[in-house]
Length: 542
Picture 1 (cartoon, rainbow, N blue to C red):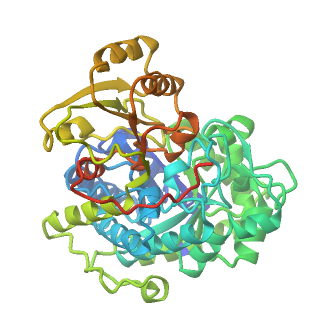
Picture 2 (picture 1 turned 60 degrees about the vertical axis):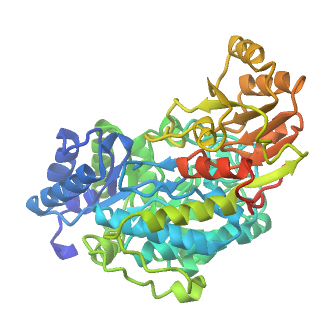
């Protein structure tokens, strides 16, 4: 690795950029970024993934390209949060539960175990940084972007699970990234789409939003990602945390004592790109104290960002010493993480943060059966029966009618799984008389009419609801209300537990927090009485 003083200004600035690209191979975009602009890191999305083997080859190819260009090793990252946010969902990658499912278990050891499994697998395919865990405290039922990505609404519980995840990832040589600082949980707008504000006073922020981040810093987290959210009690000017010197330097660096990497959330998100432009925002983020600038999609914006930061240094707007310090932190991280082989390392902080005496060491070379058993165990500990008016377990002598919403629309925080299993499919393995009607997540009135006609003589009716936003779609609300006029319903919230707030009280209400195949299979056993779930709501349905 080149000494820092041997790097040109352009090479130093390149290290501050983490960029995405649009291919499953080293295309012109990423090749140009590595060879011509010396970018320090890349980020993978679903668009980059065909298979685990392909991604392993791609990681090696990109690292070879950086070496041939005389650049520092790349930091290769991904958003593999678990549950409904998983960029790699191919065979060979364990579909670990998401945060709210883990929060519902009440057991941070499960979170530690999942992070160790996932960290091991990520390291084996050449990834060095996971942009996880989310340690936002989701205390706003209408939050359209965090929701089940949070461990829950209680700051202490979120902190405990966050520490467990950090310990698990970093024990496997993967940098963990606590996000979104200072806290994105109490918002009702998606910052991918616009600017949002958390208006609370400093005392409230300390008790709620900041607590998990303080604990993450104590646990030695490698990186913290910023939020494109305004916090007037910290930064009186109307600017988001990502661009605030008071937030990133004054609070995070100086007051909270964080010495790791500060990475921005993607600057192409509309909360930043619309009012500031990506390049200008990047300069402001560096001025504020960010080390690593994330520009996930567009080559034009990525190149403009690099050139704008170089120009800011050349004109004196940004001191070269600021760039020097940021690159020094990045190089320190790279010496610790990049290219490090997975030797089943044990984090020195593990014993200080989580009691994990019954967690077996992770071995990625062994078959996946132990992981499957782990997922089954966690799912049965997370599924939550909120109330049951005698409709569960299902009567084996009566037929079952299941209404199942299929997720087809892809967003930044909601991607359909490549391998899916509906509840009707799973129940049919256990009960012979199962009928299933699949709908979209935005059903029309005509769809509702067809279901009402079809379901009229059914004795046991299960309606599965699904939303990744703050509100249950109107079509699903209408469907549930019409069905409840003539049927005692079993309603299963497949993602957002807050769906109950927007429908009449059903006969039984069950929360699963995600619709992954492992959860659906366990759910079928719960509904038929073969398993007694032990999950507890990590949020209040008020």
